Length: 189
Image 1 (cartoon, rainbow, N blue to C red):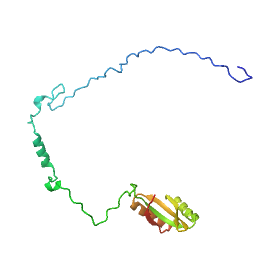
Image 2: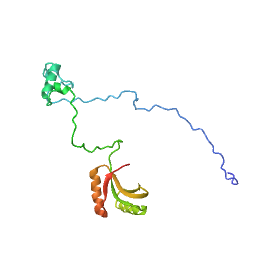
Image 3: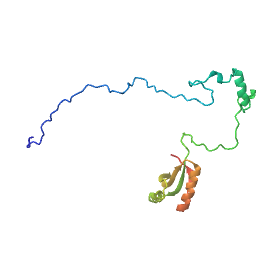
Image 4: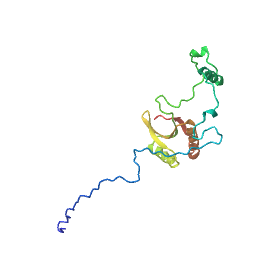
């Protein structure tokens, strides 16, 4: 090694000895089927022959059943009323006077969600303070600006919650813990 340049000499590279592959002994070929002998169990009721196949004489003789008999049995056991000629006609749509149940998705196909408005402030610092208090309490709080004429208000919201019941429970809990009078409204994301 030359100590003045600190570059080591080139390594000696020798070709390794390559041995021919050898077929292992006592291992069957992967192409050969593996067939293991299976033990045939004999039931004690005597309906089977000794070689594991059902004895034909032990089975009771059954007459063939036609398709009509199968259909009759199915109709007899079906508890639904048989269709009538009037059922073939489409029924006129009925108009309900009661409002429909609240849909689970809005017109855009997004799930309906709810938020709790905990406050509305003219100064962003006041909104930020309430957001921090709510977050320390473990709630998903955030603020958003809202233009009202020439003024900007900062709403403090918690949520969204996907069910109205969950949102109402959160609202009651927040009102109690933070002495607020919050408002429940639909989330508009």
